Image 1: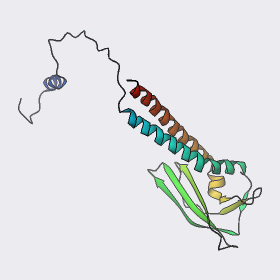
Image 2: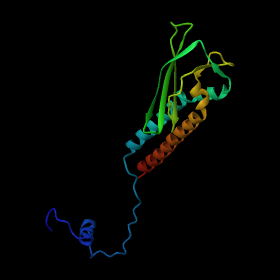
Image 3: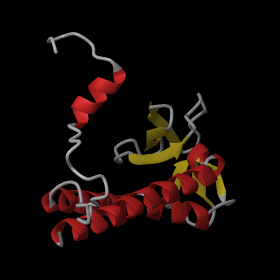
Image 4: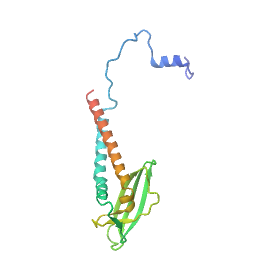
Length: 181
């Protein structure tokens, strides 16, 4: 066989597979399949999934719960002004939106940061209208995130938490399999 020359399909496949005609074909391999990767790799994946899930629940879930609790009570807040609002879309799938709400009545007060995540949707040039709840006067948000895209934000949270949980369970299973092999 010369280097760099293509071989016919049957000959090349037989050479690549190292077929030995002297070995009987009835021999069956009884060894169980091993888990790919070392236990350290799956432990790192498991810890990363747990940390991401923790961060998602600590940083994102309280705002969604608050917005569901106060749904239908949002009114435009004329004493507030939205500034520095932007949505960054990643891979046409997920959008991370951020805005700062500043008080017009008290300009020396620190602005309130509002951030949220949406799947398969973007800001789309929506106006950033600051709103305040009629029930809880300290709760302020952007109307677009608090009312218009609340269902999308909820489904995005559930999807992200579900995917992270599923990845963590798979990593846990593969860690268990790698340790016991």
